[in-house]
Image (cartoon, rainbow over all chains, first blue to last red; front, side):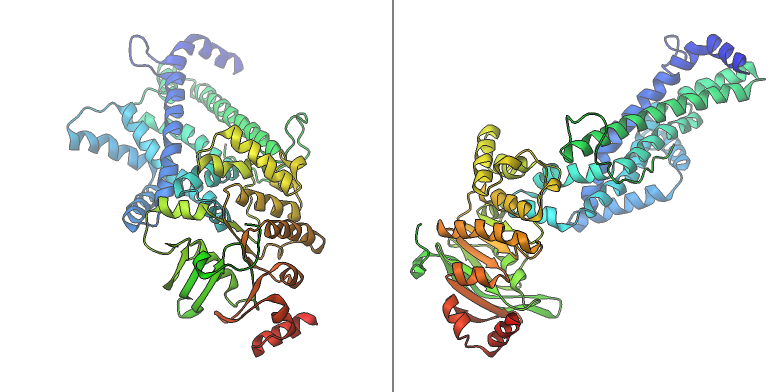
Length: 252
Length: 255
């Protein structure tokens, strides 16, 4: 079986890596990585804005955003994707590429989930930090930027990471609207071979696992480094003397 | 400002007039009026739940009030104003919390220098040098690179005082600064506060440290149930309190 898989990779590596490119659109692993990176890079700032809006003292900002977050979190991602795919061209009359549809939908969906994580991180800090910042003359946004968010986001690294990982995995759903990603390429390979679905999709699973695991690894190292610095142990070698008490909740 | 004797009316720095505040139906402050003069050290004492902390938090508007007014150098703190103006006002009133509230993600020297840098726009190296001087003043120059989590409670509170002083406020408010400390650390914090008072800083302290009140305060305000029942110099307050509630409070303290 391993020889089958090696043979598949040998024959189809280019298709799995970049799809039909340059004869067709960029696809395969390259497109999956681009879609994942863009989704995460956009969903993260969006989630901070949504969280700040949900914590706002102005009801005209708080309520609509709360509604959006609730609705987004309450429907399946696949349904949102199909909605955007069929309704956006219908409403706008524009021919929106499926990649853009997928990216936007993922950003909204994961942004909504992530905003709850960010909000929880901010709320769990308590009033003391904001009081101290305000008493020193910091404005609300300044206090958020320099005092509250650096702490809240750090405390939430495990949950933020979970959302990032699930964002990467959710890019596979682009398959249903023909986003030419890695899953799409693997399925093309499977259609040509017909007899080796297990091998093809095992390769697919291994690639996704490798991507998600790498991200988890990098994030955990980052977290440990920050924790060590804050414990004042930077420059004391690689082994942390104080292991941060943390529940590892990465979802792979 | 080398004197700690109360100055005439026109030199009042904080004037509280008929301030009331309630949480729902429960009144916390009932028409409180009082003044603090330049360079004066006022100790606010009273039983728990009497409204001391709420009163001191209204002075830099960490708490809103329902009626009355509080002026600081002639400016009404609770008037409707732009947040920029309020932030500027707040930066001129130092505040020290019971629980220190240091920023745990910043080193000690960053805790002290971040507000001059971000609020006042002072150059980072200048703010840094000044922070080191302030840390030296509270006896923590050697802890500049440490993080708050590595310090004892007393050290954290001294950093918190240095952090407040970094904004060069003419007035300092202390909200039970030693209540969260182990007994052996109370002295080091009170020592810093005493030296501040000796330099002529205007101070309002909510505290249960009656020794500090006796030695350092120019006046004591005794609060109970949201009202100031007695205002007197410490020798008078401790020797012959006039209000029966104050007499009982002092008698309870002696047990």
